[in-house]
Image (cartoon, rainbow, N blue to C red; front, side, top):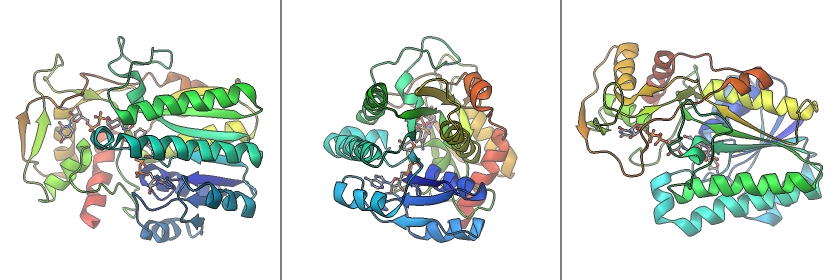
Length: 335
Ligand code: NAD
Ligand code: WQD
């Protein structure tokens, strides 16, 4: 049985990926310091899978403790999710963001060298493309100067990993996620936003639940069909499955180069208004909303050309927007 280290494995995307790994009979070791997750997520993972991943409450910034994890476990591959991810907060706390997302990554890369781990998957983001000149966005689109410190940590992360791969016998896949949404069909795990959500879907579900009075749709004067901004919303379970495909490719030495990059999206753009309509239809309820000015730093439109992942990883998004939004609402109801 192959042993996979999942950093940030109790977080939103990490927990869904751990479930998929366990269901495909990988042995899983989680490193998560609970800075943006809860310990009970571990019990939920056990409940879904009937399996027990090992969990270390270790901060990746603590190199000594991280080394212990590798001393105690012979790791075959790593999926690195652990990072701070709030775009707005990253502007207020640049030092903390650089420290967590970069030092954490460097400590982990040092361990890959010391303990000879050759397969490494990195969570990157469509944020590295900014407002792309051409849509859909392919992996070859030029990277734009990121608008946020968070975005910079993703671009720097990609570069650091690529530099390491260029000098060593180390194979990596950089996965650029578009907008992950939804929750596990069991409604036992999902996204846990801290405080007032920044992201659209948790704001929509909290408004439907009466926790927020009203959703503000940021901007109805974009040059799009209905004036609202367009994104590519990808179901978190579909996203999780792509990690297993990528990891297996690396573990089986099927990769064609030691650095591969894949967009993970549906290939279809949806406007904010379309998302709100789809949420209402899927769940048979109404969401209070108003139009508000554009949010600073937002782009008009981003959606993936996901054909490379289909060709090379044999992966594609399967779940409809309405189905995703049904799972998001089922999860919200449990909170
Ligand atoms: P999340 O915050 O839910 O999960 C991250 C997990 O990492 C949390 O459980 C947190 O406790 C843990 N963590 C953070 N810093 C740590 C550290 N120093 N040591 C140990 N554990 C630490 O976030 P998510 O939405 O699941 O995102 C996972 C990854 O995907 C992140 O790298 C994020 O930047 C990237 N990403 C997310 C999105 C998105 O919209 N959710 C989009 C693109 C990329
Ligand atoms: C989606 C759309 C908003 C909230 C962010 C990060 C990106 C990546 C994914 C990590 C936009 C609109 C939102 C609200 C709204 N994360 N909106 N009212 O901004 O596309 O991407 O998450 O890597 O880096 O920037 O996602 O969910 O915040 O917004 O109208 O209350 O919904 O303006 O058009 P975004 P989002």
